[in-house]
Length: 291
Image (cartoon, rainbow, N blue to C red; front, side, top):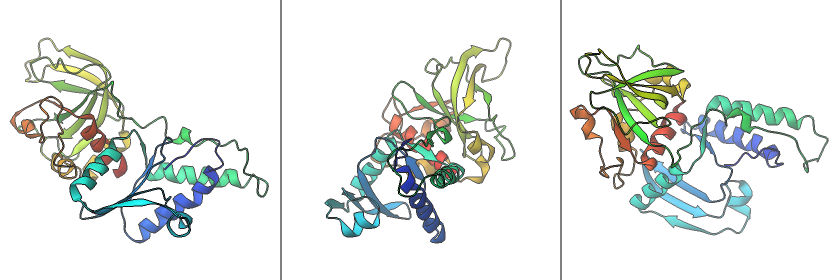
């Protein structure tokens, strides 16, 4: 959906968002709300056990008038592969995934502002909500590269009680200099042993070679945690290397260089694999929507 600052449309969004979240919760439906202020298209897809059954691309808004009263047009799609491709396209768009806490703050802020307005006045408003979410979400962009990276080794796995830093984390690479990794790149980390995602980090310094280090991983970068809320509770989420691949379109490549469709090289000691932007977006959205 959209949440444009100083738009009278915000006054209608409070009840809509609250009703949507409340009904999903009551009916035990998992949900996430994404913000894209350039959004205009409408797509509705139903899934069962993560498999898409039917989808509609339509002009209709997800409202009573849009779905019941207005004369709208749309196309019904029942081909699973087409629907998976459509879902991946939607996920690759640069949207912001709101956490439940941010949703609650936005709804309360709109409600609080609405109480200050005279009756029926909706023309000019002075209300911003983007400050709640704009400073924390990383958007997938073409000028960055995205890697998935193991943390820990088979001899010393990353145990479930451990946590990566919620600020700056030192991350290590093998004896071959990680030439592909540079400042500004994104490292999606997972724990060796559980194979669960630990969070994602933006490289701020490096890589540096640690002189006198006899480790198999002597190269180091410093990286900032872009999703600290997730990293604090990583072990409570069932997001593993296997599940993020299984929930993605199997016909599309997930690795950048060889257009591969698996992350199998990680099983043979690879210290990183570069991902396609589309798959990276899928992984980041998976983590953001878990919070």
